[in-house]
Length: 154
Image 1: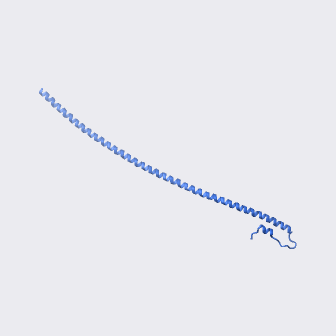
Image 2: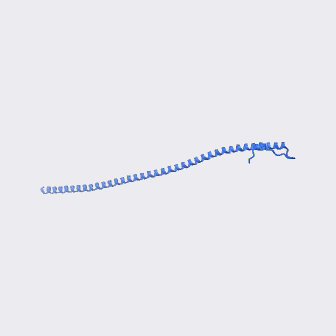
Image 3: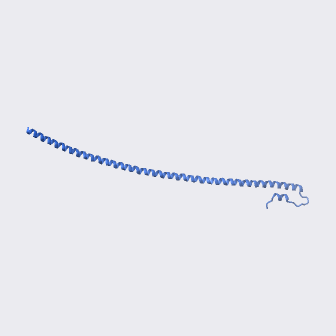
C-alpha cells in the first residue's frame, strides 16, 4: 500500500494514557506530508524530464541510424562507381588494343603490299634491263655488220 501525503496528513493515532503530544504529532505529520508532497512533485518532474530526455535520445538514435544507413549506402554507391569505372576502363583498354591490333595488321598488310610492289618493280627493271641490253646488243651487232659491209665495199 502506497502512502500519500494526504494519508499522512489525515492519519489519526489512537490516544492512550501518557501518549504523545497531539500538537507535536500533528505538526510532524504535516511537516512529513509537505516534504513528501515536494518529493512526489520533484519525482514527477524528474520522471517527466527523463521522458523528455528519453524522447530526445530516441530521436538522436534514430538520426544516428539514418546517418549510418546513409554512410553505408554512400560507401556501396562509391564501391559500385569504382567497379563500374574499372569495368569501363577495361573495356576502353580492350577496344584500344583491338584497334591497335587492326592498325598494326593493316600497316603490316600495306608493308607487305609495298614490298611486293618493290619486288615487282625490281623484276620489271631486270626485264627492262635485259630487254634494253638485248636491244643494244642487237643494234651493236647491226652496226658491226654495217661497218663490215662498208669496209668490204669500200
